[in-house]
Image (cartoon, helix red, strand yellow):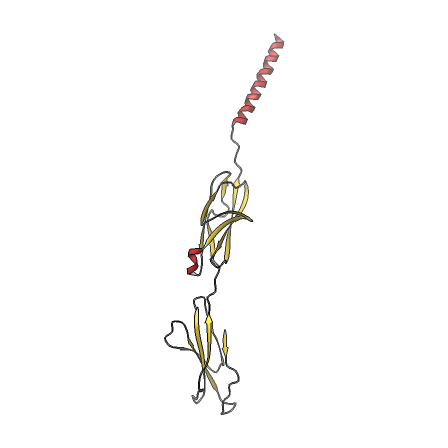
Length: 205
């Protein structure tokens, strides 16, 4: 924000050189301190996220003979803190990791917030596209279908600001193992073979 002084006149005439001394009294200050002293009739105040509070800005105008205005011009301003969005990093699994179908996949994320007071209330949720998978800084899932999956972690702070991170993993199709169906098929082949052999033998007899 910029503070400026307009239409300042000196009784000594237009050739008088005027100086503008800007002072600030802010939160935690015991006394006001000078921030600019020059012939420039304006001063720009720059504040950061930690500058919350009430400020008094004043300016004293004086000429080259050090004759000043009767009283300084003053502004009262209040700086309010702005909520900043949180951040999140997926720490597990790594990008491109592969898993077998039906195996547990462990997910973990590390959320953070530049506003210290918001860190304890951060919420993490997990999605695949629009499908909600779970919540928490860690969670596990084992029902992912074979194929490529892009998983998103979304972190939200108490002010409803959010950000996200993504990781892509692959689930490999489970290899078929010999089981009851395979055994039945083998037995069927054996029975058919034995039956054919008996038929041939019977004919010969």
